[in-house]
Image (cartoon, protein in one colour):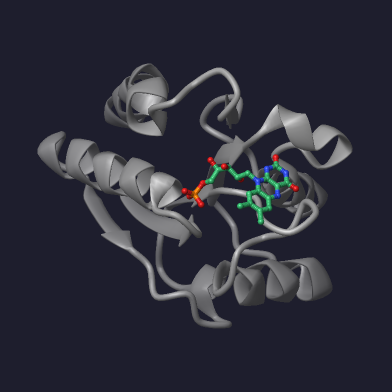
Length: 149
Ligand SMILES: Cc1cc2nc3c(=O)[nH]c(=O)nc-3n(C[C@H](O)[C@H](O)[C@H](O)COP(=O)(O)O)c2cc1C
């Protein structure tokens, strides 16, 4: 059984809805999962897996209050052994260079920390997908199946 801490960064609720779907699927498969309070020590808590569900705001920015956790990771690069971290990034490709910037920031920081992912990150483009819950369903099913192996 995996113990999954889900971190949400959402402005208008899309990433939040994706996170709720992840929570439901993980719990139905018998895993322990929780939407994590986004406190500075969130990464230090006793989770085997972290799943970041974040949209992008501003100009490639992480939404508040997930920003606090991002800066804490980036500035301290904490080392916790046996941890996996995965990312679902919502964005809009019409923003050009900052497309899905928040999710990419997490992907970069986890790479710097040498934390592996269960599978390649999912990037959801609002220009192509009007329903992020539907757009994340297959990715989440694969993620849950890998955790259950
Ligand atoms: C003020 C504002 C700024 C945004 N900036 C970006 C951006 O820099 N890059 C990007 O990919 N998407 C950007 N977006 C698009 C959102 O990330 C996208 O619509 C996402 O699906 C919203 O998810 P949410 O409902 O969880 O907030 C921006 C949206 C708004 C309203």
